Structure formats: structure tokens, C-alpha cells
Length: 236
Image (tube, rainbow, N blue to C red; front, top):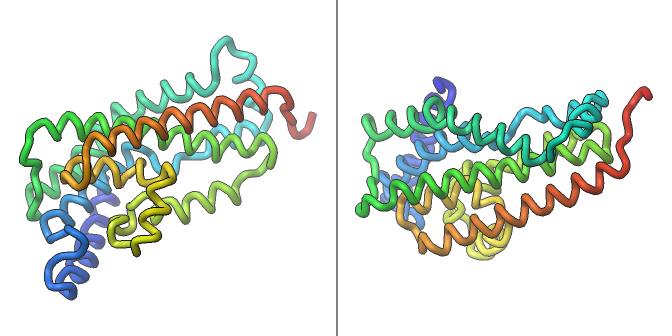
């Protein structure tokens, strides 16, 4: 949490300097909206667990995943339930504190309509599900690669830019924004922030997230079914 706050202060300073150079506003982001974007983003980062721990891939590499596949459960569903439980705890320890810090010490753009608060929580929960689904696919690549650390490192390096953590996606050139919004990545961070700030249609943002949640979970299920047919255990 302390690390999140420190990096949040650095991001606020950099983006505030950019806003000052641009006469106080960039793509509908003034200083209050930018502060709100930063502190919600810092909270969501731990809540959705953007980068994960690559635990499933390590279990595939060691062969321990065979035990998981023997158990009378659906592995993807069990891991999703575990991640939702983790998210409930992270809401109190990772999401709420940075937001409260930003609200108390910086200009903050509060929603004009109180209904946006529960809609933001709904959007953040869907973002958590999509984040799990993406991480599951990244880790499931170990069923074929055996050592997926290259894929995992590539995701860690690129995800911040793709999902709107580094800078708001609206800061990108028009063609880049259009391309990114055809992918699931903005649904991880940018969409919940936009729901809170009232940027764009809330209904369209939630439908966009719901579509990618279903699509990515379905893709993970298909990959798992394929992997179950051919499990390679190193060393035996």
C-alpha cells in the first residue's frame, strides 16, 4: 500500500506537469480528473492484480498441476473463486486506501450522480474477472511452453500501457485509441475509471466489460480443456 501511494505521488507530479504545459487540460482531463484517475488506478492495480504471481505456470513447470487436475473441480472456476475472495480482501487493503488518500489530500472529481458509486464497484468487479481470465491465459501458456517466463515478462511490461495505467487511453492518438478499445485491455483499468468519472456511456462501458469477461473466460476454458488432453510433466 505504501509503495502504491509513493508511485501515485510520482504519477500525479508527472501528469500535473503535463497538464500545466497543456494549459490545464488534456482530452477532458483537468487536474481534478487526473488526480482521480491516478488514485483510482493505483487502487485498482492491487485489486484486479494486474500482474499476478504466475503460480499456475510454476505448478505446470514442476508437474504439481497434475494433482490439481485430479481434484473433483473445474480448475479455472476454482481459481476464479479464489481470486474473487482475494479481491474482497484487496478492496479493503489495496483499493480503498489510495482512493481515500487522494480524496483527502488532492483535488478530486466526485461523481455528480451517487448511482455511479455502485456502478463503479460493479465495473471494478468485472475488471477483476477479466484480469483473472487474462492472467489465466498467460499462465496456461506453460502447458505448451513449459517455461512461460518470457510471456509473463512481456505481459508485465506491456499491460500498463495497454490497459490505461501508464497514461489515460484518451491521451493516445485517435487510431491507437480505436485499436485498443477493440481489445479487452482497457476493460481492466480504464473502463472502471471512466465509469467513475462519467467519461463516455456507462451502459456501453459495462456491456463492453461484460462481453470481454465472458469471451476471455470462454477462451480460458477452451485452453484448459485442450491442455487436459496432453499434459507434459517434466522429469517423469
